[in-house]
Image (tube, rainbow, N blue to C red; front, side, top):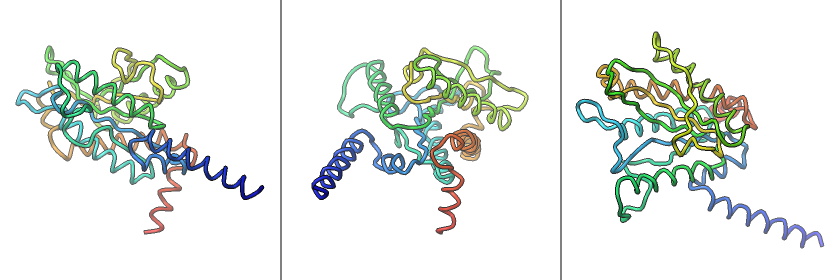
Length: 254
């Protein structure tokens, strides 16, 4: 009887693992979730036919978003936080052979991003973007947005995370131009989110001076470092296991 019970238990675990593998696009997220490791989903905004905002010289938002996101992923992993990205190259999240208007393909893209975030089981999703306000090129600075709808617990976590990241950005790169985290419910990622989600607008491409900084690897890494530090400071306090303990254990093993 014991062997039969053990077999049934093992089979149940195997089935659960298979289901989880299909649920998560990145298999490493499954291992991280089982280990109780905090998970952050990074969403580099735009990509492919959707370039996003542009600077005066035609620099596309999508490329800078991706570079900041790659830096962010590396820094989070150094801190003992599992990180995955919705895209890792210059493409939209639709099949290459798909046809349709830019609007329809963008809708498919956004739904896929939302699906990846919802199914990841992440503790926080961070969508990286750049802003533009051509009516006034003096407007500058990084700002964080969150959704206020859906389950109160998720909305509350999104708001607190946004406020935490905003304080760090104000102290790091917004000196003299401090901004407030704002609620925004008119975009799909922030509409009744299943997982705590924020959108970080890392600066304005319409501001010539800020656009020049955003195009440099040094500034991209500076923004990513600020985000990584603030995400770690916020999320590790709420994780099943302490991030710093895991990180120190990892360093000891080297």
